[in-house]
Length: 99
Image 1 (cartoon, helix red, strand yellow):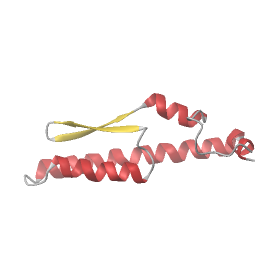
Image 2: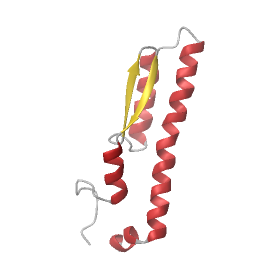
Image 3: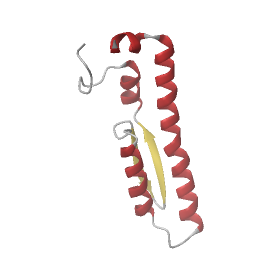
Image 4: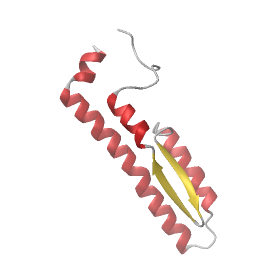
């Protein structure tokens, strides 16, 4: 059953859109946090990095994006190879049925 759904074009498109939407959200959060750090001198970059890391872990994007600190700003780097593997369904073999 899972194989049929995964190979279904509409399901594939829906999963691709869901992942793209989830990858865009941390970028918006990161830009907002960078603006807060720039405007408010008492805001700390490290605190924002912790919050964003927790958000990324909650939405299971840990292996797909990486947060990097550049001075007083944070930058999000996408791991395109990992994203492609997830979209193609070529994960490490864990987390699925064998049926």
